[in-house]
Amino acid sequence: MGKLPGPRTPLGHVRWGRRLTKDLYDGLWALYQEFGPVVDLGYGPLRWVYLFGQEANELILAGRPEAFRWRDAFQVLEVVNGPTAITLSDGEEHRRRRRLVQPAFHKRRIDSQLDLIVEEIDRTIDGWKPDQRIDVYQDLRVTIRRIVIRALFGDRLSERAEELGARLRRPLAYIQRQPPRFDINLPGFEYRRVLGDMAQADEIVYGEIARRRAETGTQDPGIDVLDMLLASQDEDGSGLTDQEVRDQVMSLIAAGYDTTSAGAAWAVYDVIRHPAVWDRAVAEVAEVVGDRPLRSEDIPQLHYLDRVVHEVLRVHSPAVLSARRAVEEVELHGLRIPARRMVIYSAYVTHRMPELWPEPDVFRPERWETEPEPYTWVPFGGGYRRCLGFALALLEIKVVLVQVLRRTRLQLDRTDIRPTGMATSYPNGGVPATVSPKRSVKASLPIYVGKLK
Image (tube, rainbow, N blue to C red; front, side):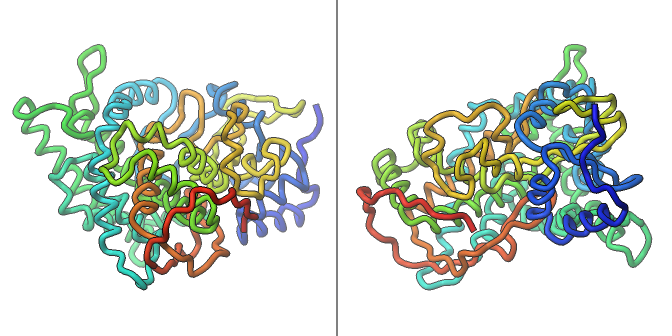
């Protein structure tokens, strides 16, 4: 068992820390290229072990999940998600909360949201006029926020979606910052303003929870996600507390606001940037759906579109990195990672490894004609803690593409957009585009293979 690879001098640690702070994405890739799949970096409370690749993902997500604790690593999310969110839960608390929340994400329930999703996406597209300049990313953030809030609360709080989104804007931006952060609850500090915004958001959510509690037995229990959360019961008859319900609701809103909207924006960006991918996807949608309304049974028939979405999430994984704390010693590649050390794994790096993904810098949906090896594609994590909302996120991204492909034609104002963000990878500067008349479908075009920027 050798010493963990990494910089050998204090100055080396400082230089790598600065490089990661300056450009997290290029810095992570450079760190892997320099030191390999296990890297020890930093000092004191800012000391991390970076684990890269398929074996690292399997170790953390499935091989030894009991050896890692989530709460310490995700503490920064607590200001938004709350202390009892599934993301911040470990052990028996996590198992109980996940068991109670999981029925709200049954496939049939997800599929039942299709008409709602189409309605909100069409509402956005209806506002796009020929020759208008738009920001696809910002427009889809608003769209998907409305979808998530309506899926959670039905139409009862839809009129407050904009207000709730406004209250969450600053807190979500705050948790995207790279450390160090200063969570100082004093006048003049950003953290104080974040707490104020969250208090106003909580007033809306707790108010709706109280109304639903008072109406128990007077309406169909399962009309929306909030009803299902309130109706869920453990074997002993206990359910989720108001705090637990609030925290799951906020987690879902935050995930929809940030991760799903970013994934949808990247998907639109990538299909526009690769004209033959666009044309082949348009042809498939025309063949499967035609001019009639989209139906849930159409989604599994859109095979090429499914490959496009998987490739988008390979290139633009929702999270560039994810962290855990090792609660006991673990071993990887013959190296021992000490207990209590903070550990990071990176979907961004794994998805670019040429030994796992031939020509990883090429956007190629056709690579998904065969299944990848386990733990080489981890945009939603994996194992028993895979993101509960992954099916809803995939459905939203696919439906965004279907309706954009059917109803409009967009021209990118920039084709050199880079990712940014730590908690979520989103397009730096948005996705500016100009709306133009829709072109005819040319299904016979060959597949264009373009280099990633």
